[in-house]
Image 1 (cartoon, one colour):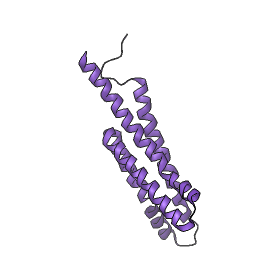
Image 2 (cartoon, helix red, strand yellow):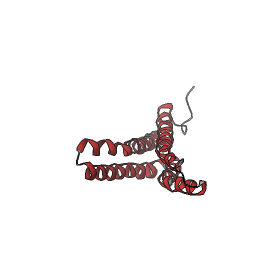
Image 3 (tube, one colour):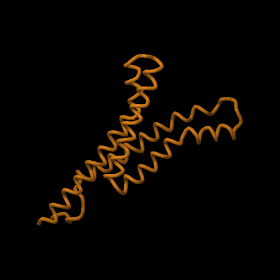
Image 4 (cartoon, one colour):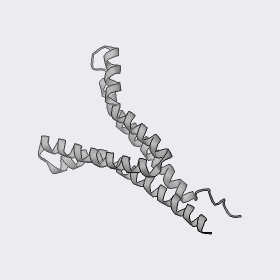
Length: 138
């Protein structure tokens, strides 16, 4: 029995879900860095405010994930660009402080998962598109 023509293949679905899961895990990892605000001896209100401020990048990435979930090409392109920009920023910031290429490159790895995620979203889009075009041709 043949699968319905409008249903994506398991490979295409696996790539799309891999992108989503990796993005959620990467955002969660990034959010872990904001937990260092607790236990600094300031009041609870200040700690919660600092926690929310430190998570602004994570909130932005969650918005991008939602966009990519619905519009894989556009969301994937933006997430890839954000990952590349973050890598460039963290490289230049850490290289400027230490004048060490290896330190700069290690810091630049923060953006690498988002480059991979964005690429996976775009690959998933093109695989879906290819499958839809092939179905129309039949």
